[in-house]
Image (spheres, rainbow, N blue to C red):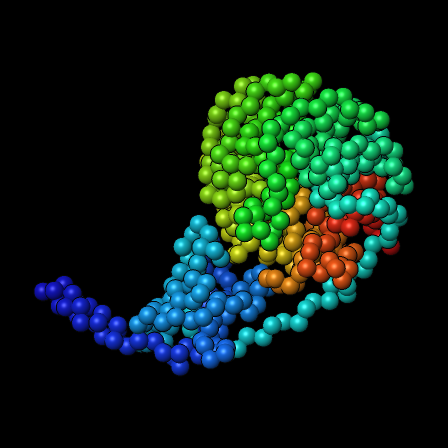
Length: 493
């Protein structure tokens, strides 16, 4: 009887709600929400305004400093609303709330419920003066190479040579004072970090080849084709871009060289460059694979993470991260660590692929390869513009520090410092700055910073530091998007 009555009341309530259509006067002004997911909340604001006589919406995403984003013209359908850029919400006149699900474009994979309530206006914070955030490091020397540097730097302690590869397709060997010892041209951009292994330097290029060079002279020893039809890297303003900014580097167990390619294959090469075996992935790959025991672990842009035997490529396990894993795969303390464009940082059991934990970062890809020391994991972020420290055991957050821009590269680390860079960009979704900086490893406090201001013509392009820095004896080596290589003092006085 009670159930019958409840159904009757629901039946008469539904049309009553539909007969109370939402009006612009009900919405005009400011609304805010604090949705929760993955144990962390994020503050959102929604503003309804009239522009040129038409109602429209503006969205504010505080977690990534994206303010006043246009949603386009407002449309109403009874007690439902939507915008030109879809974000459907339902108006409840009783609770005076707007409810819905965060759009997949903003929060992929997961359907995260959101409830907006009336709020006061939101003020856009004043831009931070990063120049005053910390002292500048001492500069020992700098050298111009004439082309942007994306690929991480490499240093060989045995020869004391520093290796830098450019977008122009040339790899340079530099001496202790920045003098060019040798250079080698591949003819196409180099987006993967050169790797010094024994007496050779291995460099992969967008030419589709992996080159083995004599580490002292730069003379080519051999080349192996790892991409028969290199696909163009589409710029970020191209609707079809995949933001495939980097490329896989080589890993070696002394018997084979392993490298992932953008032609959707993991290659195992003998040390003379001949093929030992290869296995297919589901999509392009830019992440450097990792080794653990008798397995090589690789990840692709479909989100698939796989472990295969180093002997013959036979599959051991597969894990689905749902979206692209562009940053290098890392293994530490028997855990596989990956960042996904699902906004997840994920730890897997290296032997089985079983998920151990994952932590969510609101509105931000995680592309910076994790680094680990003393049970603590450190990584950068993309739109969130933070550097993070997590407990490796369970993924719990130790600290996070705001930084000037996009941090996609691998962090260099000493006993007490973290050194990394950020890339700058124009005004959308918010201003980003290019910089190189050192943070206290225990607290995340910024100890020093070199700010790389853009030229006028670079204001709507990339600038700053996209390449991972490397360390020498008391020196930090870094390269920026202007094609400059720097040697900074690690511990400025």
